[in-house]
Length: 386
Image (tube, rainbow, N blue to C red; front, side):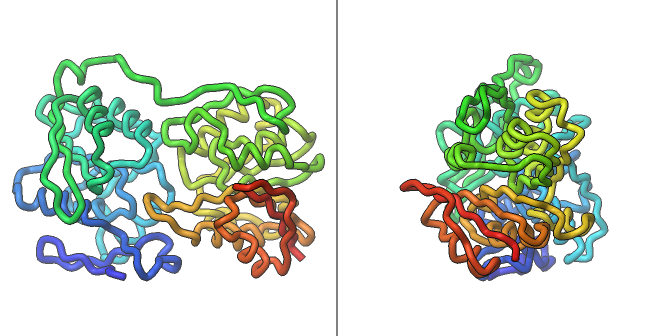
């Protein structure tokens, strides 16, 4: 695992977040990050007012700290990584860090965009940028070669203006976009907030859902969530935690089917938590006062501010990616944190792909696990805190 990065004659230490879960083969930056920073160094041009988007673990933010950039990310984990890496390198933070749900302010001379996996989110960001660029702003995107697709280039061209790419270096590529004044003044935006109706077993009728631009599963109900809804049974007056809530469909189903329940919605995506809030308000406004909405890394922050062992049920549909990397540490952390929040006899209900092997993890943590339902691709597991 490489943690040292030499840049502009200074050596930095960078870790993924949380550092204790960093796999020995993974590092906090990629060839694309090095490529864009070396390009800026070689150009030796004044960067002016800088905006950084989608910096996974705060590496770009740290390297440009002295330029006082604005830094925006949807991932709470990325925000934590930025602060930890600033501290680790003994930097006096000059970065203005914003969540994805907070609007930008002012006009930027240089915009650095790490390509996100979600192209709907990319379009949202580029459309948002229009009112924060001038004719001579430099927009520079970067990513792995496989991420620089025809679709990506078409989005840049259609939203902002003329676009071309660099040569590939170490399987990374840069995208140069030159803002077109006519596009910057355009108010024609393609909708990136998805609204649709879900009618699934376990919802007691259709519900109207809203997904903000970077929320998983776009305009469809996640297959695992649909399977869990079909088999989910919660009693009245329970304290329920929807962990990795996404758009909040699982917690929302509890509000619809029970009375007196108190639900806590937790996700590391700012847009996911805001989507969950909107969906509760739009479908069960009478129950919103019984809901809490938390942006967190699993339950890291939430556990420090709450009394442990107070929840009756934790619902969990774990992700198995961190940014662009497949990993199982998020599921491990979710299960461990869930155990700390459950009362004695409290239940953790997990839905996941069969091949991910959650049975063994839960058995080791809880001492036993039961299969509630299964199908060829998915399985629903129950673990009880003893």
